[in-house]
Amino acid sequence: MSQPLPTTELPATASFTLSLTGRAIEKVKDFAARMPEAEGKSLRVFIQGGGCSGFQYGFTFDDRKPTDSVVAAGDITVLVDPASAPKLQGATVDWVEDMRGAGFSVDNPGATSSCGCGKSFC
Image 1: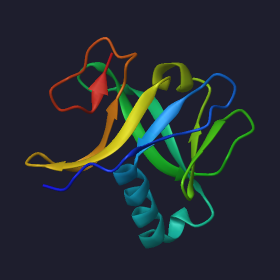
Image 2: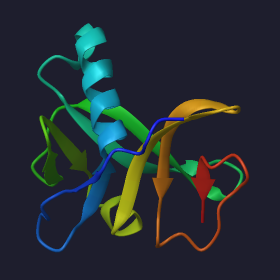
Image 3: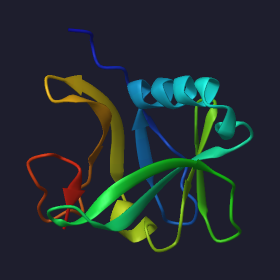
Image 4: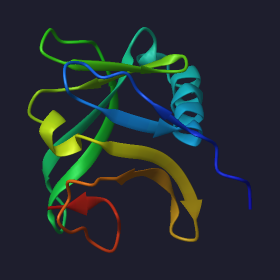
């Protein structure tokens, strides 16, 4: 098993903070290089209704909007909309690969509970 890469603390926009691990940064760069539709866009991390616990995390490449919180990590820029920012405050995004599969995982100190699949929270 490989050693975890260091976590990169992203500079805050106003009082918003978010962290990405080195593994997450590398995976975003990998996806961006392989997806033509990602060209010139940033990673957007967002919260949407759904999942077994009420909310779920979403990740996509998108253009910056004037109301976004913008943070930088390595060679990537991360966008978070104003509705998602309070629910993502202080969270850490990682890329995990295990027997359940591979995907982004969010360690969210603001979540009161999460489901067994790790994709939703409340």
